[in-house]
Structures are given as structure tokens and as C-alpha cells.
Amino acid sequence: MNVILTLIPFFILVYGAYWDFRKRIIPNSVPILLIILGVLQCCILNTNNIALGDRIAGIILPAILLFGLYIFNSNGLGGGDYKLLIAMGWLLGLAGFIKLMLVSCILSIVYCVIHKTKTVPFAVPIFISYSYLICFNYIV
Image (cartoon, rainbow, N blue to C red; front, side, top):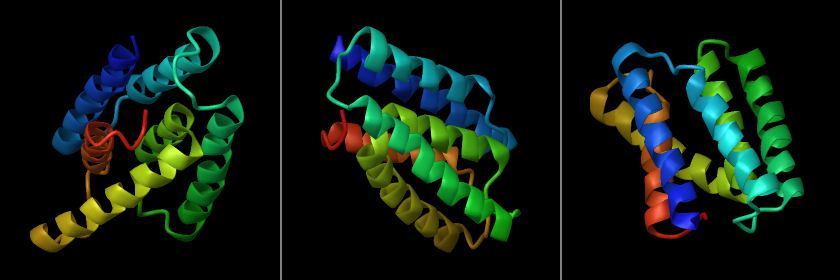
């Protein structure tokens, strides 16, 4: 059951990364489904060891930091990116979110250097980071 609940976000992120790469938009269904899955994992099925307090911290602290980023640089991330990151904070908890953001930011920098651009479809590095962290069992 735990493997299935780990793979469902993978496929949801594939969908979101595809749309973000193609159209530079992340459908609202992606963060909504991730939040619903987090509620199922935490409150109903109680399948993983991420505490409710860690999940709440995974929403509140990134939301504050991302809001500050938005105030100082409104041309950075789009609204869908913010929603996706908050949903990932809920799904992974604060520790998992920090690991995800570290790998995602490194991948984004590499993408910008290789493609000589200042914009990144950020759902793609999030998807790749989630896949990497799951494969190497850093978050579950």
C-alpha cells in the first residue's frame, strides 16, 4: 500500500510537469490531488511516519518564504508553482520539502545554464527531484 501511495504523486507530478513544460501552466487539479493524497496518508490511512505537525510546518514555513519571494520578485515563480510547492510541503512534511527544494533548485540552475535562459518550468525539476528522492529512499 505504501508503494502505491508513493507512486500516485509520481504520476500526478508527471501530469503537472508535462503541462508546465508544454504550456507553462500547472493545472489546479495537481496540487489539489496532492493535498487530498496527503490527507489520506496522514489522517485516514496513517501509512507513513510523517507527523501531522511536520506536515503543517511543511505548509506554513514554505508559504511564508514563498510569499516573501513573491513580494520581492513577482516575476519569479508563477501561481501554479506556489500552489504545487505548498502541496508538496503538505505531502512530504518540512524535512522532505527541504530535500525536494534543494535538489529542485540545483536542477533549475543547471537547466538555466545549459539553455541560457532565466525561466524554468519549475514543475519539471520538482518531478525529477521527487523521483530522485524516492528512488534513493530519502523521502517516504
